[in-house]
Length: 266
Image (cartoon, rainbow, N blue to C red; front, side):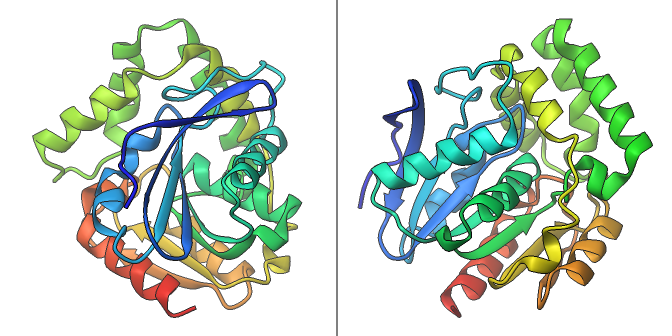
């Protein structure tokens, strides 16, 4: 079994850090914005007995290089495909949370043959696709205003919408530590990549798809999950009681059990 320490690859002239652990079918883990592969600690620790888990730091996150400001979701998808090529992973289960779920959709749009299945957790069909033009514009403008704030101020604004009220102090401190190390230079391209609409892609998704959603998600409410379920052929929706937007961290036992059940069934 490989360790959970950070490894590195060079993709398109950028340093891309990632963690690879376990054995079995490949399961790629895509984190949200203002975060990195550390978000997947409970999954890396519990699912490695059955899957080879690959959790990257997307360019602009963690220990990876910052991308150009012109970077778009298509560029992140190409970079991810390049990493999978280097790791000799032809097909994988692809699990994306929040921003990472939109990236999973873009990877599927560009490289449908790479996905054995999709697991979309607390995410969107792009902000424009799931929240509408007005709400999308408000979110983009709000995040762009935060570029000049200190990390502690940014985390203070985000934290109330990320975790359910019952989340432990320890989890709040862990997530605060991760988010406080976000890359300010990547905020603009990351938020602009969310000004998108994948509604046209959803009916064309032809791989098994699991939607995992925190019951108390404030950033991407259950109505978004229901729209995705209705639009993606044969999609399955599982709601995780008591969890907010970071359902994989808040209710890891439930989250992991559903991922294991779904991926193993394929």
